[in-house]
Length: 97
Image (tube, rainbow, N blue to C red; front, side):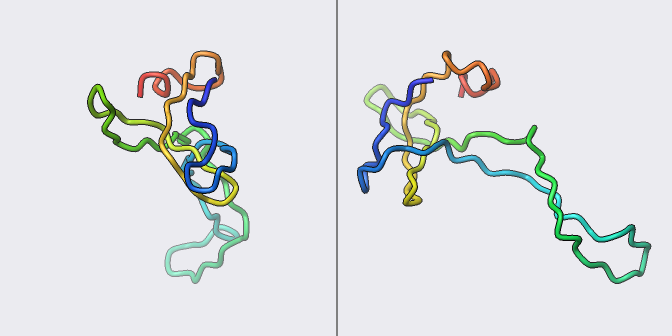
């Protein structure tokens, strides 16, 4: 894939990846029954199939567009065009977003 704006506009650091929220299950300990007090087990299962890149609406010269967000190691995020064609691991909806 090709990231068009690789350097952070705020600090100049290179992008470290795309911004992607994750859905998870924080698991309970044991198998609680109705009315039982429950404790967390300390284990978390990540639902990887629900992972999607966050997009931000921006106004470009040719009109509005939803661009993916990337971030640097300093926690700054910015929208940029990404050409997904050379990244076969990305789902089809990423290249159409």
